[in-house]
Image (tube, rainbow, N blue to C red; front, side, top):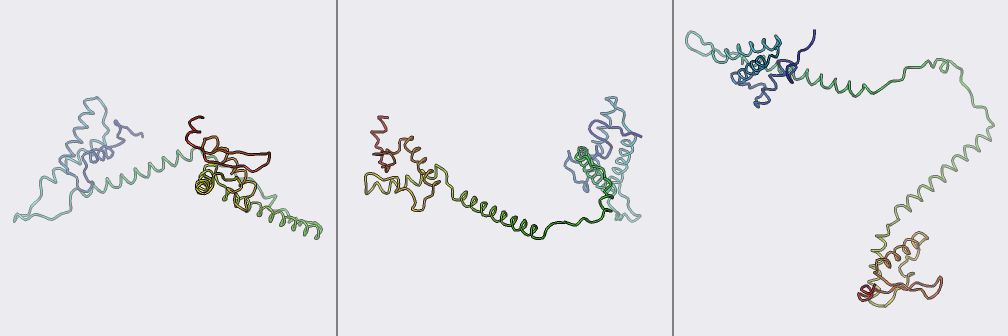
Length: 252
């Protein structure tokens, strides 16, 4: 037994669902006359194209025609009173709902098959020789064991201290751009009362080697951008920083 696929539809319900979706019809509120005409028209088109239509498509067409007749010809009693009966479309709606659920499950299984097709499992190994072997006791000198354990704790403590210090330093570090902004603010404030500012005035009292280096690099960057002038009278002497005028910038 094999499945015949017509165009993009795998079966009659697949075609019917496509027509319902294209017509924006609810499964539980099907306009039977309209959908039956579309369904039969599609089958006629396939016949004109010499495409063999499976018997299951013909069976559903017959069911739709029968349902159309039931919708158009309601039965009445002898006193012309309408008989209240179940909506003839209910059975078709239930079958379509069941088909949709089955289709979703099939699509999910296909995705799972595709996902797991590239996964390979390792076959189980016989580990009975390890499970059945007697327990092995650690044979060592108790004093040596204690010393080793204390050494392990000491290394662990030093490692934790290094990590804490590294995290603290990394949090406190600032970029050159941030330091330039800070130094520029300090310089502008001090230049209001004095012509030059020494480099040491830009450093915090507790500045470490990293802070001094970062400040010096930031000063060099400010000189490169022609924002300040810096002079030093002697080697290792104090660096004096003055404001660069517009005339000096134009000369450069």
